[in-house]
Image (cartoon, rainbow, N blue to C red; front, side, top):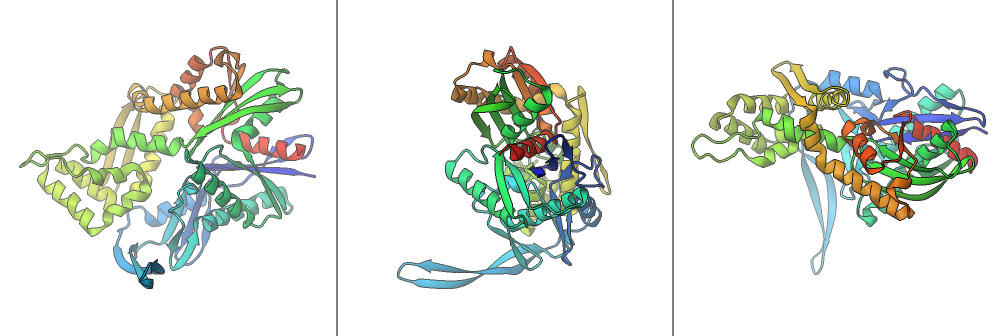
Length: 446
C-alpha cells in the first residue's frame, strides 16, 4: 500500500509517496518554478472561483496591484449578546469593506491557527471559518496530488509544528483546528506527525546514519522553528525530545521592513512646527501586507495626508500614501522576501520596487541584516539548548545537525548552529521536500 505524506507549510507545501522501495515527490503545481513545491496560497474571486498555488499569486497580482482601494461601511453579520439582568440583545455588525476588491488572497493561514480570536471572515457575502479556508486549500492540494499520482488518495500523514504557540491552551486549540480542517478536506483517514520528527526519519534513511549517533533537526520555515533531538537505533531514529517556538520567515520579513524599509515611507518624519514624530501607529501596519490595506480607513488615510503636508519628509509620506491607496503592499513584501533570500548568498541586496507611481531601491548590507536578526538568533539558540536539556544531552554530543525549511539557509542561524554545537556536522536536506518524504516514510512504518 502506498504511504503518502504532505508537508502543509506556512509558505510552501509538498507531497511525497513511498511504495516500500523508493520515495517520490509529486508534482503539485505545474506553474511553479519547482512543480514539486506549491505555494500555500488560496485566492477566492468575487464570482466564487477558487485558485491555489502559483496561479493564486499571479491572479491576485494581475487583478489587484495598482487598483484603487475603496472602503465602505457595510453590514457584515449579526450577533446575539447576552447580559445579566438584561437578557439577550440582537445586534447588527458593520465593518469597512473594500467594494472594489475582485478577490481575496489568503496566505500563511497555518500561522493563524493559534489565534483564537480569528474565527471567521466574510468573503463576498459568505462566512468562511479559518478551518474551512484551510480545508479548501487542502482539498486543492489533494486534487493536485491525485492528478499527479493517477489514483484517488484516501489516507495521508500531515505534518504539524511542534508548537504553534508558547501558550499551552492556544497550542492545543491550534492542533484541534488543524485536525478539523484536514478531516473535512475529503480524506477517509488523516494522521499527524511533528514536522522535525518526519525530517529525522528521512535523514536517517537517506544518509545511512551510524547506530547511536545523536541527531538534531533544525526545521525553520515560514511560521515556526521546530527542533527534534533523536538517537539513531538501527534503521530508525528514537526521538528523545522536541521543542519549538513561533518564529519563522514571515516574522523575519517584518523585521526587515521595520528596520530598513519603514524609514523609506516616512517612519522617522517629524512635524516642522512642533518637532513631534509622525504617528507611530501608522507604521506598525507595515509589518504585513494584509494590514497595510487597513490604512485606507478614512481617518488613517487623513493622518497620512496631514503628515505628508506638515512633516519634514513629504516625499516619503507621499510614497507611503501611494503604497496604501494603490494596494502595493503584497508587491512590497515580495520584494522584501527576495532581498532576504539574496542576503543569504550576497553581502548586499536591495528591496526594489518599480511600480506606477512608486519607486523604491533600498540597499541592505548583510552585516546590518544580521544585527537586526540578533534577537531571533538568540531565541533560536535558546530553543536548541532547551531541547537538548529536555533530551538529557549536552551540545558536544550532537553528531549531526539536519537543517530544513527556507529560513534555515540564513547564514546567521547556520553560524549559530556551528558555534552552539561544535562537534556536529551540518547537513542540509532538501529544503522544501524532506519533511514530506519523512512523513511518507513514517506512515509506512506505522
